[in-house]
Picture 1 (cartoon, rainbow, N blue to C red):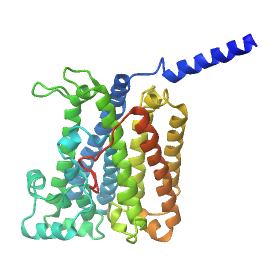
Picture 2: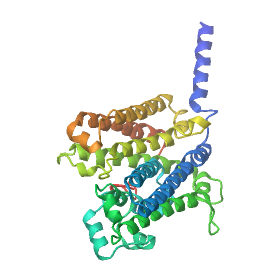
Picture 3: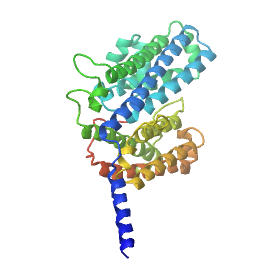
Picture 4: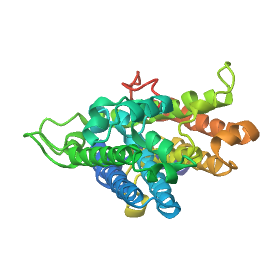
Length: 362
């Protein structure tokens, strides 16, 4: 009997050690890994893709053709996907600069764009940045111009201001994403780079607990947007009938790719860079509840699989195959509940309202 109790006691002590996470990384280690291996590379990828889009737009306008237009279409999809994958990291410089209004606002206003082009065309980056509304800028405005069935002929018209407008739109997106990278990585005016401020690698840094809370709250607000403002509204689950306009985007039909990129970005933040032994929020959750971490990982995989199972453009599927889209919504709600009830409580994060809570895009 004594040996039995000794065995039980030993097992209990071992469980206690594992549960306390004796060898678990601390907040600072996780923040450094996320910043260096996930967040900054994501913004660098977005900036690189935006630069490629700017180049492709210039080449399209120099020689409009079906081939150069198809190149722009792909460059646009690549740049938008890279940007949306960074949405899960949408705090710090991107909020301070209010970059969303310059890069990817939804919905756009086609009538206002056409009126601007006819009356006082914005043909420079400065004009696009400083005189146009968010509904006339960003990926959505480019999508409106380049996915027009008559895009090549309209861009071939030497009297049309469309090409100058496109070049300016692409230039603003490229310069703004580059500026975000710079603020994350470069010290300026005697202040630290934001990644050093976030991770505690500079004097006067953000408290580590506050930095972790910032990361987690961003996931909370983002998944609210995906579930409530987009999918629930599109499916009519809020009681006011289906609203296809709740799905961002236009003629490019990129809704599913947008959704996948956004969820993948959230997974990047949670899991970290697994291929390079990187750390993520998972490494803070696991020592507190390995079961909660396993559920989170499963919910991410289920959500991505549900997105991949949808046939056709998202707006078409909402009407023709609503069960497939409802499955995506349900899996995202599983993920949302796990974040709200387990991750938030385990990490002691207080969740209120974000600066962008209620906006259709960041």
